[in-house]
Image (cartoon, rainbow, N blue to C red; front, top):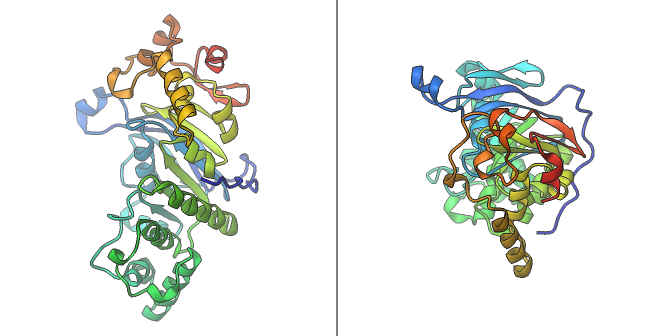
Length: 339
């Protein structure tokens, strides 16, 4: 991929956030079973400013998509708060969610399943506009303009999804998300189903649209390298907890948590020799895979896989604290930086 320079036109974090999550906890199930089960999300907080991209990154099962669902109202939080432009939307009703759909939209992972194959592209893009009261003619006009904004000609409006490639379908999905002129967009693994060259094209398109419109992106991904391509800040998740957060370059180049180090080593690179060296280094740490280790009952959830784990790591959950450019939830951040 040819990297794009992340936008620097981000409002200060002490200003009003476009999207804010405070102490979010999500438990699946109900009753005693839910209360006794480990939370899928455990006390996660972050803010996304207008014009900013915040990357949520972690392995499968880390809670990234659960956070996205909680923000979108698809998964009710157990506790915590979700704020949209300062307004609490945590328990918004279905009617209120329809109104929020103007300002909070989503682009899903799979461009092949996220578009209805029985509906034309024009019908798909016009649907949210019609629900908001636009006339048929106005909805069609705006649908055509939306296609042009993502680099597709307006005259493809009557074609069906099967007539487009994967990259084109994802452009259409982006146009659908932006046709109502939202201010916040959840991007749930938007390029993971695409080949590398198409990934770069779509990510560059997203960066341009963000900067042109001042959009706030919550960008969910499993690859730190892809997150660095688009985001200004990164939140690293493991088993529903924040392990590390900070500016994307600092988290990638100078991680202060063993889990972030492992993710960095696992990120694919186009040079086979470097890829082999990374894999060898990761294996030498003995970190292993997420599914091979049971979560710790107390303390840091990464203890069963961590090469630096000591008694305090099992006994006490480490708080997020400032460490050399990032905030790390690790009792041994200095040793982690040296891995």
